Image (cartoon, rainbow, N blue to C red; front, side):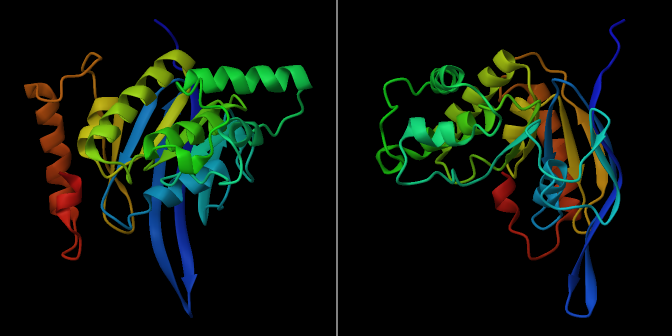
Length: 262
């Protein structure tokens, strides 16, 4: 039997923010082990701390309590072994596709290696021929491809995705889900996705972590063993979707628009 290789460990993590003279508890006692090469999705109602958890994993914000370790290393600041893609592409509008991707290279490399890395990742995300295009000349989906390539160009061991398709139309979103799945299968990276889209989580993930409303706590860790590519209308797919939806319905506060999860 192949031994599991735990790459990311989240141990009893809580997060509180100081507000005026009091504190706001956002996450409470989160413990999770993620294997190397696993695709994990995190779902939960708005404000439950999903994005905050990603920021702590990458080292942008420290936990109030608990520990986060990548390959045994305590996370205390951002490092090149972890990359992140945000909901907005966050490209530099005055730089071309090639230059935006090259900007992501932060480790020392020779000129020839730098050129090879950029070219490789332009091809990886299907943007060959658009090297000299500016962001304003690209569609929303193409801009996100640039953002993903920029995050991957340092060869991080873990890629964090913070609702990267939230601003895209439905058809482009499905296309981008397929592209990310191809990247995951090709690169064998550990990926952690935060999403409001239940179908997206079921379509992409090996496991889905369901968080309660604030303060976010783990309600369930759902394994998705359906073979890929997954049929979104299959009985098994819809059964998992319904289970997650029920969790969110029973946990949503009255101010949450539950339509965003459909």
